[in-house]
Length: 213
Image (cartoon, rainbow, N blue to C red; front, side, top):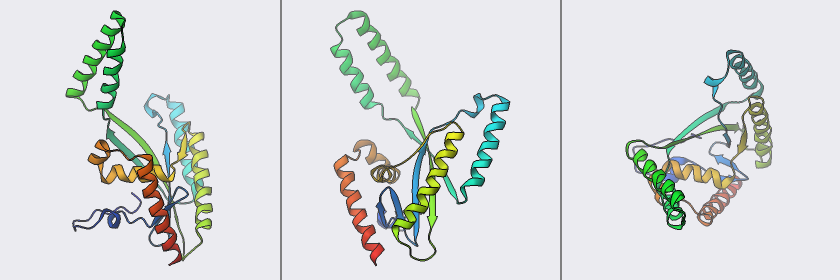
Protein backbone atom coordinates (compact mmCIF):
# COMPACT_ATOMS: atom_id res chain seq x y z
CA UNK A 1 0.00 0.00 0.00
CA UNK A 2 1.54 3.26 -1.20
CA UNK A 3 5.06 1.84 -1.21
CA UNK A 4 4.74 0.15 2.16
CA UNK A 5 7.63 -2.30 2.46
CA UNK A 6 7.98 -4.48 5.52
CA UNK A 7 11.56 -5.13 6.50
CA UNK A 8 13.19 -7.75 8.71
CA UNK A 9 15.67 -5.14 9.89
CA UNK A 10 14.78 -3.18 13.00
CA UNK A 11 14.09 0.25 11.61
CA UNK A 12 11.60 2.92 12.57
CA UNK A 13 8.01 2.80 11.36
CA UNK A 14 8.52 6.11 9.59
CA UNK A 15 11.39 4.61 7.57
CA UNK A 16 9.28 1.59 6.63
CA UNK A 17 6.24 3.64 5.65
CA UNK A 18 8.37 6.03 3.59
CA UNK A 19 6.08 9.05 3.79
CA UNK A 20 7.75 12.38 3.15
CA UNK A 21 4.68 14.34 4.13
CA UNK A 22 0.90 14.76 4.03
CA UNK A 23 -0.53 17.93 2.62
CA UNK A 24 -4.07 18.84 1.55
CA UNK A 25 -5.15 15.18 1.76
CA UNK A 26 -2.26 14.18 -0.52
CA UNK A 27 0.44 11.70 0.46
CA UNK A 28 3.89 12.86 -0.58
CA UNK A 29 6.18 9.88 -1.17
CA UNK A 30 9.86 9.61 -2.18
CA UNK A 31 10.93 9.88 -5.82
CA UNK A 32 8.31 12.50 -6.74
CA UNK A 33 5.33 10.22 -6.11
CA UNK A 34 1.96 11.37 -4.84
CA UNK A 35 -1.17 9.50 -3.72
CA UNK A 36 -4.81 10.27 -2.99
CA UNK A 37 -6.98 7.75 -1.13
CA UNK A 38 -10.71 7.37 -1.75
CA UNK A 39 -13.08 5.34 0.39
CA UNK A 40 -15.66 3.59 -1.79
CA UNK A 41 -19.01 2.07 -0.93
CA UNK A 42 -19.70 -1.56 -1.78
CA UNK A 43 -21.92 -3.15 -4.42
CA UNK A 44 -23.50 -6.61 -4.02
CA UNK A 45 -22.81 -7.96 -7.49
CA UNK A 46 -24.21 -11.43 -6.77
CA UNK A 47 -27.70 -10.08 -6.02
CA UNK A 48 -27.96 -8.38 -9.40
CA UNK A 49 -29.73 -9.98 -12.33
CA UNK A 50 -27.67 -11.32 -15.23
CA UNK A 51 -28.52 -8.30 -17.37
CA UNK A 52 -27.58 -5.93 -14.55
CA UNK A 53 -24.29 -7.75 -14.04
CA UNK A 54 -23.47 -7.42 -17.75
CA UNK A 55 -24.17 -3.66 -17.57
CA UNK A 56 -21.97 -3.30 -14.48
CA UNK A 57 -19.10 -5.19 -16.15
CA UNK A 58 -19.34 -3.05 -19.31
CA UNK A 59 -19.52 0.15 -17.25
CA UNK A 60 -16.53 -0.92 -15.15
CA UNK A 61 -14.50 -1.72 -18.27
CA UNK A 62 -15.37 1.69 -19.71
CA UNK A 63 -14.38 3.33 -16.42
CA UNK A 64 -10.95 1.63 -16.35
CA UNK A 65 -10.28 2.72 -19.92
CA UNK A 66 -11.16 6.32 -19.06
CA UNK A 67 -8.85 6.69 -16.06
CA UNK A 68 -5.56 6.79 -17.94
CA UNK A 69 -3.41 6.04 -14.89
CA UNK A 70 -2.77 3.16 -12.53
CA UNK A 71 -5.12 2.52 -9.62
CA UNK A 72 -4.77 0.38 -6.52
CA UNK A 73 -7.79 -1.30 -4.96
CA UNK A 74 -7.47 -1.93 -1.23
CA UNK A 75 -9.91 -4.05 0.79
CA UNK A 76 -9.53 -3.66 4.54
CA UNK A 77 -11.11 -6.23 6.84
CA UNK A 78 -11.01 -5.49 10.55
CA UNK A 79 -12.52 -7.00 13.66
CA UNK A 80 -15.06 -4.72 15.30
CA UNK A 81 -14.38 -3.87 18.91
CA UNK A 82 -17.68 -4.71 20.63
CA UNK A 83 -16.61 -3.61 24.12
CA UNK A 84 -17.81 -0.04 23.68
CA UNK A 85 -21.08 -1.22 22.13
CA UNK A 86 -21.74 -3.58 25.04
CA UNK A 87 -20.83 -0.84 27.51
CA UNK A 88 -23.37 1.51 25.92
CA UNK A 89 -25.94 -1.28 25.88
CA UNK A 90 -25.34 -1.86 29.60
CA UNK A 91 -25.93 1.83 30.25
CA UNK A 92 -29.25 1.68 28.41
CA UNK A 93 -30.18 -1.40 30.42
CA UNK A 94 -29.53 0.36 33.72
CA UNK A 95 -31.56 3.42 32.68
CA UNK A 96 -34.55 1.44 31.39
CA UNK A 97 -37.35 1.39 33.95
CA UNK A 98 -40.05 -0.35 31.90
CA UNK A 99 -39.85 -4.10 32.73
CA UNK A 100 -40.82 -5.35 29.26
CA UNK A 101 -38.24 -3.17 27.50
CA UNK A 102 -35.65 -3.99 30.13
CA UNK A 103 -36.16 -7.72 29.52
CA UNK A 104 -35.84 -7.19 25.77
CA UNK A 105 -32.55 -5.33 26.25
CA UNK A 106 -31.31 -8.04 28.59
CA UNK A 107 -32.14 -10.76 26.05
CA UNK A 108 -30.43 -8.78 23.32
CA UNK A 109 -27.35 -8.23 25.48
CA UNK A 110 -27.12 -11.98 26.18
CA UNK A 111 -27.55 -12.74 22.48
CA UNK A 112 -24.74 -10.37 21.45
CA UNK A 113 -22.39 -11.75 24.11
CA UNK A 114 -23.05 -15.34 23.05
CA UNK A 115 -22.57 -14.36 19.40
CA UNK A 116 -19.15 -12.76 19.85
CA UNK A 117 -17.90 -15.64 21.99
CA UNK A 118 -17.87 -17.96 18.99
CA UNK A 119 -17.74 -15.50 16.10
CA UNK A 120 -15.67 -12.50 15.11
CA UNK A 121 -17.70 -9.50 14.05
CA UNK A 122 -15.90 -8.08 11.03
CA UNK A 123 -16.21 -4.88 9.06
CA UNK A 124 -14.94 -4.45 5.53
CA UNK A 125 -13.98 -1.17 3.89
CA UNK A 126 -12.95 -0.51 0.32
CA UNK A 127 -10.43 2.03 -0.92
CA UNK A 128 -9.10 3.17 -4.28
CA UNK A 129 -5.62 4.66 -4.30
CA UNK A 130 -4.96 7.19 -7.06
CA UNK A 131 -1.34 7.78 -8.02
CA UNK A 132 0.67 10.46 -9.75
CA UNK A 133 4.37 10.10 -10.50
CA UNK A 134 6.14 13.26 -11.61
CA UNK A 135 8.95 13.14 -14.13
CA UNK A 136 11.50 15.22 -12.32
CA UNK A 137 10.67 17.64 -9.57
CA UNK A 138 7.35 19.47 -9.94
CA UNK A 139 5.47 22.02 -7.89
CA UNK A 140 3.07 20.49 -5.38
CA UNK A 141 0.18 22.49 -6.85
CA UNK A 142 0.68 20.75 -10.20
CA UNK A 143 0.73 17.30 -8.59
CA UNK A 144 -2.41 18.16 -6.62
CA UNK A 145 -4.18 19.34 -9.78
CA UNK A 146 -3.27 16.18 -11.69
CA UNK A 147 -4.44 13.98 -8.84
CA UNK A 148 -7.62 16.03 -8.51
CA UNK A 149 -8.50 15.37 -12.14
CA UNK A 150 -8.06 11.62 -11.70
CA UNK A 151 -9.99 11.66 -8.42
CA UNK A 152 -12.86 13.39 -10.24
CA UNK A 153 -12.86 10.71 -12.96
CA UNK A 154 -12.85 7.92 -10.36
CA UNK A 155 -15.64 9.53 -8.34
CA UNK A 156 -17.87 9.93 -11.40
CA UNK A 157 -17.02 6.40 -12.54
CA UNK A 158 -18.11 4.99 -9.19
CA UNK A 159 -21.36 6.95 -9.43
CA UNK A 160 -22.10 5.34 -12.79
CA UNK A 161 -21.61 1.97 -11.11
CA UNK A 162 -24.09 2.92 -8.39
CA UNK A 163 -21.39 3.45 -5.78
CA UNK A 164 -20.21 6.41 -3.73
CA UNK A 165 -16.60 7.56 -3.37
CA UNK A 166 -15.05 10.26 -1.21
CA UNK A 167 -11.46 11.33 -0.73
CA UNK A 168 -9.98 10.80 2.71
CA UNK A 169 -8.77 13.89 4.54
CA UNK A 170 -5.18 14.21 5.74
CA UNK A 171 -6.14 13.10 9.24
CA UNK A 172 -8.11 10.13 7.95
CA UNK A 173 -5.14 9.01 5.85
CA UNK A 174 -2.89 9.20 8.90
CA UNK A 175 -5.42 7.21 10.93
CA UNK A 176 -5.47 4.55 8.20
CA UNK A 177 -1.69 4.15 8.42
CA UNK A 178 -1.84 4.17 12.22
CA UNK A 179 -4.32 1.29 12.26
CA UNK A 180 -2.21 -0.66 9.75
CA UNK A 181 1.06 -0.41 11.64
CA UNK A 182 -0.30 -0.33 15.21
CA UNK A 183 -3.46 -2.49 15.10
CA UNK A 184 -3.38 -3.47 18.77
CA UNK A 185 -2.62 0.03 19.97
CA UNK A 186 -5.18 1.52 17.60
CA UNK A 187 -7.83 -0.70 19.21
CA UNK A 188 -6.85 0.13 22.80
CA UNK A 189 -5.84 3.75 22.24
CA UNK A 190 -7.46 5.32 19.17
CA UNK A 191 -5.93 8.49 17.85
CA UNK A 192 -7.58 11.58 19.24
CA UNK A 193 -8.20 14.59 17.04
CA UNK A 194 -5.46 16.46 18.88
CA UNK A 195 -2.90 13.66 18.47
CA UNK A 196 -3.76 13.24 14.80
CA UNK A 197 -3.47 16.99 14.29
CA UNK A 198 0.00 16.98 15.88
CA UNK A 199 1.13 14.14 13.59
CA UNK A 200 -0.42 15.87 10.62
CA UNK A 201 1.34 19.14 11.42
CA UNK A 202 4.69 17.38 11.85
CA UNK A 203 4.36 15.57 8.52
CA UNK A 204 3.21 18.69 6.69
CA UNK A 205 6.26 20.57 7.96
CA UNK A 206 8.45 17.61 7.03
CA UNK A 207 6.90 17.47 3.56
CA UNK A 208 7.37 21.21 3.02
CA UNK A 209 11.00 20.94 4.10
CA UNK A 210 11.62 18.02 1.75
CA UNK A 211 10.01 19.87 -1.14
CA UNK A 212 12.46 22.72 -0.71
CA UNK A 213 15.49 20.42 -0.41
